[in-house]
Image (cartoon, rainbow, N blue to C red; front, side):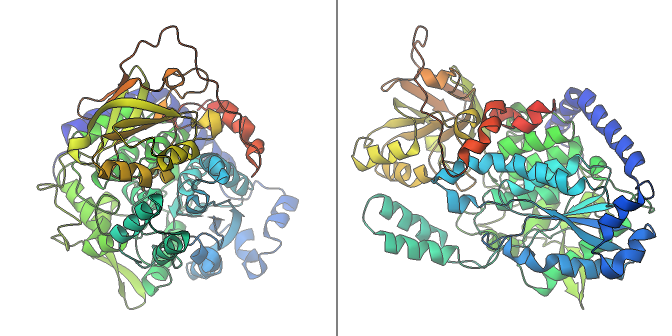
Length: 603
């Protein structure tokens, strides 16, 4: 294990210093909460009776003050990743009893699927579902019946929402319990090819649906390396999983054994035991930096340029895109998982997976080793992989060498010298450019703009042949205050077609692109957003835009002074969007986490 890299140390120290007042306020609050809500002896008899009325045989243990685990679940059986959670609570109650503890389902949180809502009206609720999940987590835990938290969630906004909500109960220990990825379906290149053929009108809907159904086909997480699987990676790097839990398939003996171990471990790290590990102490500045480094080293989802600052804020920590940019300059890309490579997360796991990645990063001094994690041995435990020893989980050292050099490489010979998440800025504001899946020859694009206010308008212009040239497609009024900052993933196939035809193409938007975004250069999450007269509102068709990842530039080569801002489209109605008006109105910028809840709470 090497000494900590100088840049990682410097960025961490800057975050610590910048966060000092807010972090101390947070820790002081958690200390007070622990003193106030430690155990259930302080509760009135009527309150307590309500809390265990349905606990049947567990009542005596709860009354006696034994460890009582609160389960917060995002179960529904529409989400493939969350369908396996249906039977978890009953099993977890059995596992708790094995160590003299009890467990109750504290509450459920909503869990929407971005794959279902992609390009649909419901996508405008997607980002704010994260705040809704955080609030729902707080409601679930507000009963103060619990000595620890088990958070059951995987997908895009769900894990960040659970983290934010759980951190406000950070006097309790917490473990995040995944359910694993679905089996691999058709090859990713084949899926991408069919999507582009459909965008060109060369295959029909039946062929496209058959292709998609062969890819998303069973219980478990979608297998591309998008936001959901990036979430699982980050929970390991932050020390909130049992080591190696991220990508073990659902409905397998090893998956069940890991869940059992998580429950047993939670019971061992409660306040009244000898190894108290509250979540407030686990998620500190070093854990946030580790999550950033893991994201960069594995080419993870751009959505975390928004989620990481929001999660950090909930723990009193201030993270910005300059921090990510400086870390990206020194963190090498050591994993190529689709859409950055050919193989999916199952191939990644088989090639060495998280144990290999953590060992490489620790060995190079790129992550902090001295974290307080839920695992007793700290971050070194996460450089191991789980296996079954009889019916019990055990751990062994990760693979010494990559099982697939096309999927995983050591730090010494990476796929790319940097982590591929750049800050670009200029007279249009600040934005994120994910370079890890983009050919370096396309890291600089300068071309005339074509300006749109919706992705549907882009699709129509593409179908009409109006974009068959060098072009920077600007899609504005897609920020959090405008329409909830939807992902614009449906733009990828048509823009990919234009690029394959030999054109210089780029996307500039104040909206989001998911972790599934790929080969087209894009400046995303532009802040300030176009609404309320951000610079994007002043761009006109034909203006020459320059996007350069090498030099960190996002600019329009035009004098914007004296221009009147474009009129934003009206806010959408239907699909419940009008109910989220207060979240849109109160949201702060993307770099702060795009959250009305955190902004109004003064965090």
